[in-house]
View 1: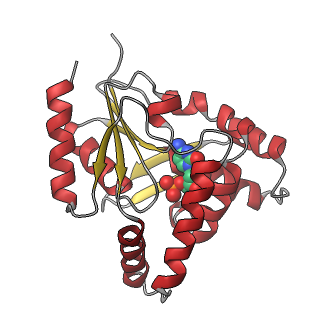
View 2: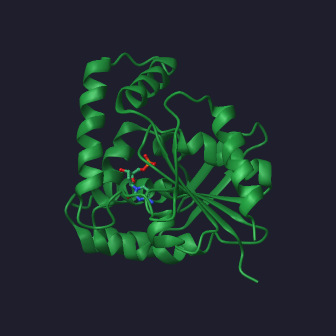
Length: 224
Ligand code: DC
């Protein structure tokens, strides 16, 4: 029997990360944060002193890096990269920027396919990313494409940064988000698009609980 996959794709700031984790917990399934893999490749390349445009070097890292994800006793995310704890650095803007660059390399994307498939274990997998439903798990039984308006995503990110004590202007964030949306949607390799059979969910005017409830209802309805 094939292990069921629920794919959740969408742009950053759509609430994907929070929602995917909640769904995985509710179902008791495994969870894949595919963005974290691109962040890890970016960080490892940076740490190894690779040039930013070294596609083959980053692909080598993607094939050989040893990664493990877990939660500590307090429920905090722990990520080890070649034996070193990197969870805090993984969430930094530096890692996000590096990730968006290495994510444009076809060789890196190819090198990460089998490690992503490795997360597919019984009883099921919730996979969070940009190309989960289109490329990595095209046979997912449910594909959600989660969006929110650009101003709402900027507002959420602004709040997140403010909560962390960082002061960034909303106007700057809005511009950055518009630029990143354009880059993600127009890159030649695996651009961010909804799968033809994805359910589009706009979270602009929905709370996290509402989105989780809708996705769970769809999952129960469609589960093979
Ligand atoms: O979701 P995130 O912010 O952690 O993703 C970091 C970067 O990685 C983002 O610029 C898009 C890229 N990414 C990707 O190209 N494909 C994925 N499946 C996940 C993330």
